Length: 81
Image (cartoon, rainbow, N blue to C red; front, side, top):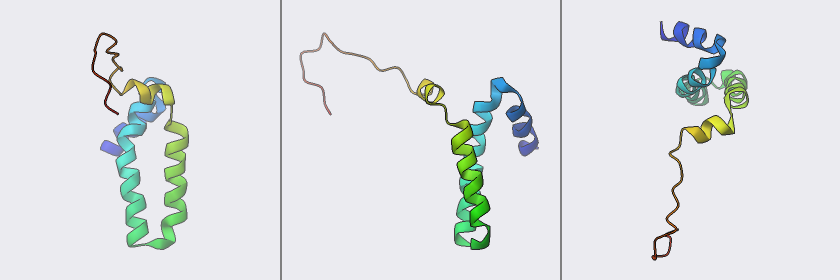
């Protein structure tokens, strides 16, 4: 049922990014399975992984997942790096 719901989300443009993020752990699991147990499937697994990374990678949306950076210009202590 989860695969079906995520497949529907991939069709809808407003939910495409979220569906890609939710499918990413499954894709990593598929690549890990083929890497460890069934090496003949590695080319297809890596093709699927590259498709996920290429299609669903959007720097602006990735940046929106992080909290906004705050500047402490009033602070006298040096910034820790």
